[in-house]
Amino acid sequence: MIYERFATTILNASNVGIPVPGGGNDQTVIRSIMYPVYFWAGVVAVVVIIAAGFFYVTSSGNPQQLTRAKNAIMGAVVGLIVVLLAFSITAIVLGGL
Image (tube, rainbow, N blue to C red; front, side):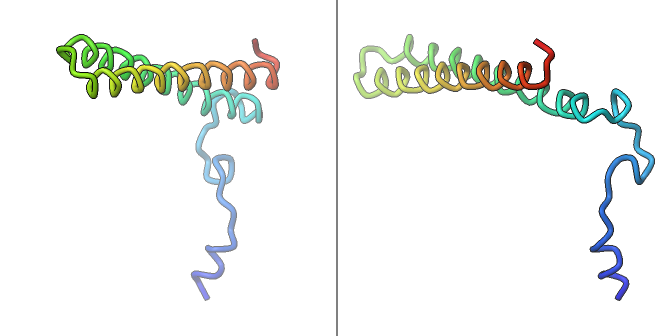
């Protein structure tokens, strides 16, 4: 009985007194969540590009390692492009570009 009462209660930041950045505007909340996600996804993509470049340089002509490094670089570049497009779409939709 107690579980059912708590299970049906919807909790959000304003109900429990947690301050919402920007006053709780939906656009501000979305920005405060999505922009750090985009930032860290970009950081991860750049780190993968750097690591794959290191593997490419140290492959010593081994075709299997060269292919693996090229695929990693290509995947990271495609991922970075997707992150940039997602950021742009979010910024345009929210009107903040």
